[in-house]
Length: 167
Image 1 (cartoon, one colour):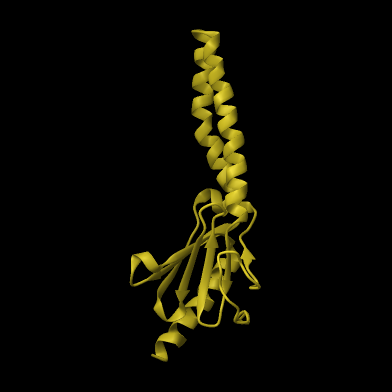
Image 2: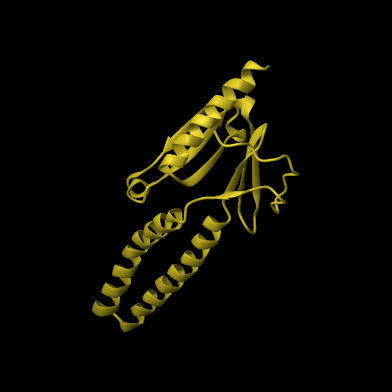
């Protein structure tokens, strides 16, 4: 079992806590999804450009711009996701422009769920969903290596049981 991090102030900017980033494979999975979605507009723009009017080929430029912007955005989003286990709670931080900080006390945990779709499994990552009695107070950590997600689930379940037993 990993030692909890020393107590330090939890802030949106990070502070001195040992924040743990998610796997870079999450960016690859999200980029693959983005390019699959952009495949249809690319084919339509190309077909219209070749069959009807050369002006329709400007659609390819629009798709390329969306692909560039999406790639930049996905990389920024994934690099902004981090989490830390503290003595009394797990804290999940997301976002660069619109920051989010979710703190889930171990005593409020009801169950921890691990999810992994086919693309995520192919890249060896999973998402750890933290559930509490209130749907608004849970959290999720996407893009964890499968072994790390399973170990985190076990640690959180054990800490949740310990915290609830102390109530």
